[in-house]
Length: 445
Ligand SMILES: NC(=O)C1=CN([C@@H]2O[C@H](COP(=O)(O)OP(=O)(O)OC[C@H]3O[C@@H](n4cnc5c(N)ncnc54)[C@H](O)[C@@H]3O)[C@@H](O)[C@H]2O)C=CC1
Ligand SMILES: N[C@@H](CC=O)C(=O)O
Ligand code: NA
Image (cartoon, rainbow, N blue to C red; front, side, top):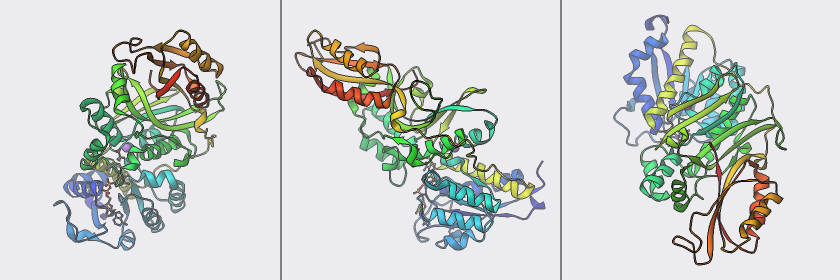
């Protein structure tokens, strides 16, 4: 049991940034001060909130006397620095200054961690202080700590997740209300899910940053944003969404990190990617609605684990931040330190072309005998085997693109991305092929 709060001097907490997340962190630190003190064994005293503009209007929960535009000065007078301003600079410099000054740091900044986490981890290690970042991946969902600590005795094989609330919200709205992408993004911004620049969400950078962080932790190997093969949701059309529903799928933006052991002609290493994928409606990931996130982890001894909850929004993200603050604060009171970065495995990072997935290819072809055989032959020549072929529109009948044209939907067995790219090119070049309407990966089947 921790000592009574009064037995330890208060711990000074500095907050950098007072936007969607920062406002909720400040509110919870104040409203839950007594509980937090009892849980930590010392009072957590919010000593300042660094903002760009001290005169700007703020939520009523913010004590305006704490506002300062001197972030550099603030980090020098704190035991724990919480960074929720986002962006690479000045966040990195301020966190380094805080670490040099002996403060523990808590950050929600996945963009910074995925780009330059090692600089911060090394500095924290050298200074002997904690660095925590639960909020950086999947908001409120405890996923960093389970992968970093609870599964430290296991071997993780694969992580598959919906880790961006904005894009999940957008795809869900497109599927259920027919809303267009731009309108749904505006709603996600208003609800506090989107990044300051929502292109980070819709182009997959945010999910890629989270995938890099998760892959690093899961595989004890340094993975940065540049190592992640990335596709966002801008190429997903209303037609894709409607067609997915018609065939028993939903489209989700997935983050995938997997260990490949050198089988199937693909070299051994780690494959990390983010892309939209067709997920069968019976799969648990298909039921993840709105801004919710979910992460599947497959580990050798633990088997399959699933983590589900709110991945975005002020209060849910603040919950994860506060959990980290409590951990760091307990170390200040009771001694001890959180885990360091672990990169001993030093696995190879595989190129995007080595990713192995099933694909669904939709194409319009001339409706005459022998066409299907030509298409099948082109696939076979590239070593891609067909799992199923469907012709959703009756030849030349209702729903056909035009008379004499038939739509084919080909689902492949798992094939390397490199083989598929060449195959699609070869199929597109066939004389009876009019258009390749879409190529989508299929996951979770
Ligand atoms: N909003 C969400 O659902 C989640 C956000 N995050 C992360 O949390 C961090 C904050 O996100 P939000 O609160 O949503 O962003 P926000 O844009 O609402 O808030 C950031 C605040 O920091 C301030 N700021 C930026 N640069 C500053 C500087 N140099 N000095 C002082 N203040 C500065 C901005 O003026 C703004 O008020 C980001 O790293 C984001 O990726 C993580 C998980 C979920
Ligand atoms: N913009 C992010 C916020 C949380 O990380 C998202 O939409 O998930
Ligand atoms: Na989290």
